[in-house]
Length: 231
Image (cartoon, rainbow, N blue to C red):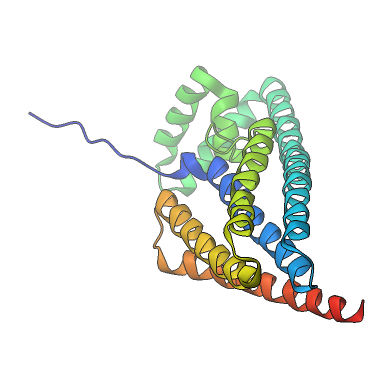
């Protein structure tokens, strides 16, 4: 007896994984950098905490709005392409059938069989098959603006919570060191989680996320210290 072969592909995770990792990564880096910049300017831990909270709120709203606008633009383009394709299927069905046939021919299917497959698939869902084969639009890749906006905002808030907690837990004299070190550890953990969920290797994503986070925090800390001396 043959056994059912079940495959678990990771492409279905791309949309929310991208938004989630981007939001959390931005939350950690932007909030930690803001806190370090304010703290390095000889401000009190309380002022650094207030700045971090303000950064969390502003960042979440900005991320949600930006992601919604961006993904909405993608969705508008997809809908326009689908409307155009639907009209072409009504106006020129024979041409569209031949167009789909040629798609399969270029993939190595014989012409007669390719035409037969195209005709059968178009009888079932002409717009759906042309959307997938011509436009690259499918259920997995289709744009979801509201989902992307909420995911980005929520993930940024979750990411920002870590650096804020470090301010509360850190001794006043060690704030810069605890904030920087703790935030880098959080970034490394995030890189490993994102790589694990996405099915990639752990090392390169972790190094990539940690390096850019360290660079951002170092630059912000240096600028904050410079401004603090000037003022």
